[in-house]
Length: 394
Ligand code: FES
Ligand SMILES: [Fe+2]
Image 1 (cartoon, helix red, strand yellow):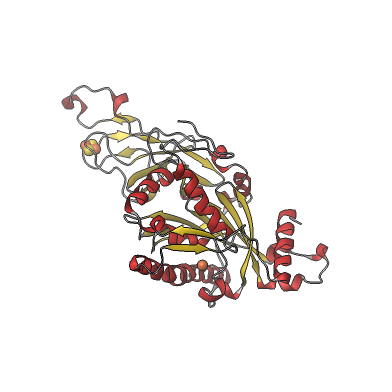
Image 2 (cartoon, rainbow, N blue to C red):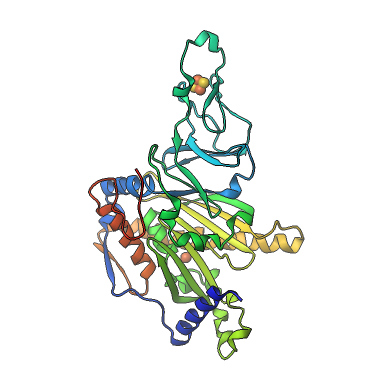
């Protein structure tokens, strides 16, 4: 029996019996400027999203040598390529001749990268290896015209990238003990069932909703709220990263049951929340939802990349139906329910009804999230303070 799940189920059961939850020390006020101010937003995008390691894709999205994935993240044209040596490399999806987009947005497999404009070609490291009509073009040093590389590391089934060229990170330092938690999810070994991009409200409004169970009974009464206990959260923090444990209503079955008969994983639900925009949910059982929340062009918009994973490729009609039901449930819970409320919050932000939002003691993960945003932004320079286990190389 997994002792981690056992411990979490015990903590959840205690709260369930007492109608309590993990709490922060006090309530917390967040000025609305944190949600609206344009200069602050631009600064946060730069420091938090472009200078820290960002979960850009799942390893599963680049399954074999030659796999590539092109996307625009926060205005950065990103190209991920898995090379012959099975290493994933990140580069800017921009030709070094006259700047054409090299690969169309999407995914596929290719032996080399060939520009659609004048057929310059690059290998899986982004090195320039061929130029159409080279004898007519004039002499250049090919070494000066490779693609711009971004630092990239693959860890725990996730491809982490820093969107600022020249900035280097150490993924183990960044994740700390949270890396071990992510490893338990075995993200390399799932089957990718579906992936979709969903328009959402602003970054902080959206993320706040991923970090508490206080809203579950009301907002999700037709979906996940049927199964989870509202306002019950067991929280473990790893610096800015967090593991949230929600209780399932079936916890009541454990009352009076000898602990050696427990199947603890059936009565809790885990969310692994990687700062600043990753949420991995519902990992217990055969289905899992990975969400990456990317800020949009303004503080009022985001795009969430939602990836539905299933333990094994569904084959039988029953398996397909179960996976489709999970996929539809999560889409509805997020798009209609969470983001429905989120858009309504966003619409009222400019109304001057509030000058701050108030986070309750029962919303400790939301508090921790905003505390870490403030820690990263407090530094006067872009070379951030490194509290606790965090440290960086330049
Ligand atoms: S822009 Fe790519 S080859 Fe000219
Ligand atoms: Fe929700």
